[in-house]
Each structure stands twice: as C-alpha cells, then as structure tokens.
Length: 385
Image (cartoon, rainbow, N blue to C red; front, side, top):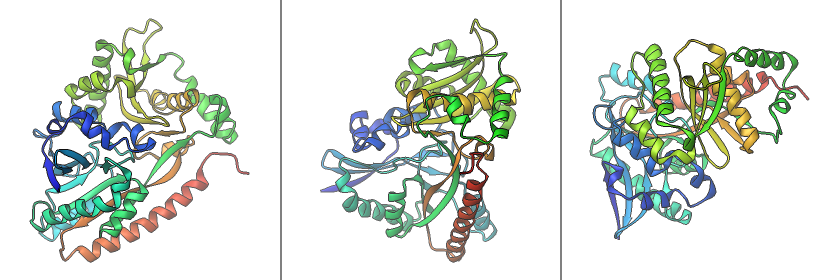
C-alpha cells in the first residue's frame, strides 16, 4: 500500500530516512543541497516558512512506515530566490487577471545548482513511482491548491521523464568551469589566449595587499562565522535593500551540521588574520565545488573575482574536483574560462487561455538559448586549435 503525504516540515521525517533516498548513486550521494541537514537549517532558521513566502510542502511517498520516495518542495507566494525566473509569465497572468500564485516548486531554495530533485529508496523505482507522484501533483493542481507545479534545476533524465508525464520543458544557460586534469593554476592559464592570461594575472596581483586563506567547515570558529554573516548581509543590503535570503540562524545551523561540506575563501586585512573583510562560502561534493554566498565589507571588484572564481578554480585543481559551479548569471564567468551549459526546468500549468502562448514561449526561449550558448562557446578565451 503506497501513500502520498505532504510534509510541512522536514522535522516530520528523520535524517536517516530522508538522506537514504538521495544516496542511491554516487552523484546523488555527493550533492549537498538535498541533505536533510541543509533543508532543515533553512526551515529552523526561518529562511523558509514563517513570513518568507516559502512554505514547506515536501512530497513524500510511503509504503506502510517506510519512506520510499520524496521531492523537496515549497508552496510559494512569489518568484524570488528561484533563479530560473518566471516573472514574464507571472506578469502575463496579471494582465489577463488570472491568479498565478500560489505555485508549488520542486526546488532547493536560493540554490540554482543542478542536482537530484526526486529521492528514491532504490533507483529501480523511478519508472513506477514517478507517475504516482505526478498524479498527486495533478490532483492538487485540479483542486486549485496551486496554479502551477515547477521542477527547477533538474537533471536531464528527470526532465525527460517529466516531459513524458505532460510537463513542459524549459531551459536556461549557466557557466561551469571544468577541470581538464590541471596540476596547477598556471596549467589552466596556459590554455587561455595571451590577452586573457595577462588580464587574470593582473587581477590577481591587485589583491596582493590582502591575506587570503582557505578554511574548511571544521576550521571555522564562531568569530569567523559572525564575520562571514556580516559580509553577506552587508553586500545584500547594499545591492538589494535587505539582508539576504539566508538568516543568521540558518548559517549557524549549517555550521553545526554541514561542516564536512563547507569551504570558505576568506580575505583578511593583514597577515595576522584577525578580521575577515570579504568571504565566499562554498559547498563541495565528491566532484564539484559549488560557489554559493559572497559578501564583503569593502568595495573591491578584483577581490570578488579572486575569492569567487580564482580561489575556487585553484581549489578544484588542488583537490582533484572536476567542476566548479559558481552559481547563476554572469557573463564575466565566460571571460574567465567558465563554459556555457544548459540547465533544466519542467512546468505544469492549470489550463488557461495563456496555455498555448506559454508553450510557444518556452520553445522560442529554448531556441534562443541554444543560439546564445553556441555563440558563448565561440567567445571562450581558450586558445583555438
């Protein structure tokens, strides 16, 4: 007997039960953002739920008392913090006086990083359980519990399976650094054209006045964390007028439960390393470094490049990681050797007069992104063969 349950908090399920679903293969096991500890830290710290406009609605499938499948999900009243944005669609709904919210998304909050969105006790269950999960979503859509269902930053195989279940495929372009077996940073530079090689060296030289250090999660003190949080909040306040999506309480919870996955590139004002004045907080898996949260107490453009890009590249080379996923947006990544890659989303909307227009829009958008990605590949600064 299989039963669908919608959970309003991950505290309703044990970490062992939840994490077992996301360790059925090496890729899923390594991905940090589906871990119970990560998602619960967002909940308990108030980064989601409370008045955030994100309301936990995790879809779970049970066989008696055994959790056999789960999708991290949220009921949302807005489109902030998703990165695979749908503002144009929301605006069209508003113009036609149609309700667009609430919507349900299968996603990791504030995390535009591709990874597993369907956890399974056994990978062999995918073909039999996904139709049941999609049926539960469609049932709630038909009951007007939400106006659309969106799976964001899915793997390509899952997007294909969702398309077979009637979801519309959508795409975006991000930039990913890939390790070609480099032994040191200069090996990477040697693959770039002379102009870019010179530019990167000049940018790195601009930060020689700072002491820069790599700190793993277990090396971060309470004082370090307070400084990192201050940097993050100061940068968001300057850029967006608020203190950021991740609360201080969530950061502290992550420090306690996710130390094994955390890497911080920090800049200090002097060699004594007393005060962090800028920091890039990353998470790592077995083969990928994920750049996530940046902040600084001073305005130093080249320091941003150093901590968010060059230190990360060096870290991947030094530790044998294959990829550096430095986050969404930013053609400045392209100029520094990050290659364009297609990202995936899957959407199911309640039937409205806009349904045909949305389908056409997604198709046109995908063709545009394919052309953009091809042009971006040609603009990469690597030497031409």
